[in-house]
Length: 451
Image (cartoon, rainbow, N blue to C red; front, side, top):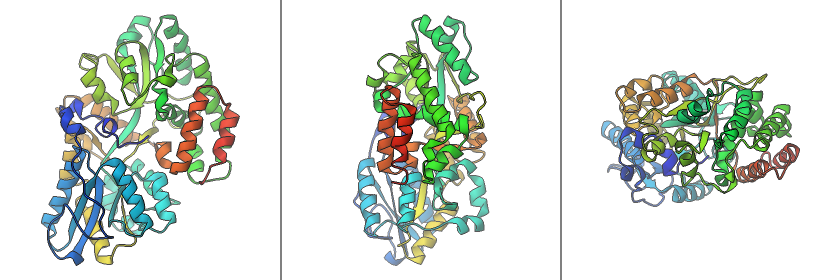
């Protein structure tokens, strides 16, 4: 799942009372700068002692990033950072071009996972493993689960930063009361609820299947709950035929069992998530449940009348699967954002970047600002900033999921290379449409492992 669309990156902004215009506005951008130095958005000084930093321009996140740099520059007049903010698509194009040409900024903002792996394989980013060992206090402040997407072949190549966004199982309390049933505590409960809701003329699950990445959430959880995080880790590590794991076949089969049982809203393949149509099905009572990102809470609060404010929305972590090996505390989604250091930067620029990581990224003031956007910073104890918030209960719920998770798996389409991710989304769509079998899915995906 791409975590940088406004609807996802500002997933709680509306719930915290941040105006929609502020949450969705994008500021002007600047072009890329030469490696390690150059140009826009920063303060003056000797160019030889400047590091460069590119990041996304969507508000309110841009403001938080900008102020972190400004505070750092004020405290470090002899080691400045110049920043460039740009919109999502423009950033993806420019950073790829710059890294390929050996002209990356000193600090590279990203999503970790598959993209980070390509940087590592090309020798374009610093190995930060020893730095984190020497700065254990920095590492110990952060959620342990946030380091998975920063780690390639056992080594850390990025500083986890900013906020996390887990996938949540939402349900409509009014619909459950109407049908006289309780929220599911297992996969068996889910399957038992399906005919009961269908008999009442209510879709068991809403799903924006046309968007494809919403379908992916189901497999992410089923793989984990049945076989544990090591099943997909084998794919991420490019192990031959990793998709053939017995737990994968079982998960794919169970998913199609749910489709065949009419577990999803009729016509789900033509419903889009970007229009929030799947959310509307839940809060209007046309569907009983929905598996979706934590970012949808804010839009349901804004668009769903009294659905959220009236206490009609329920939420929980995905339940266990009978006989599964996965820990029920595990979650999936977006465990953080990630900052790497260009291997092409000068030693002086690298030291500036490391000092920025140690003193400015997710320090107390930065944590307070991120919480103020309605998001959950990936810092142990960040829940203390939620006291008195309008949606304190949900914020604490999300914090509890992330801080207690034994594993916080990154969304598959971010964890894999862009090439493999597209094949994955295409095959997941076909799996949901019952146009391919689990075995065909496995064969198709094994063919692109490591691509």
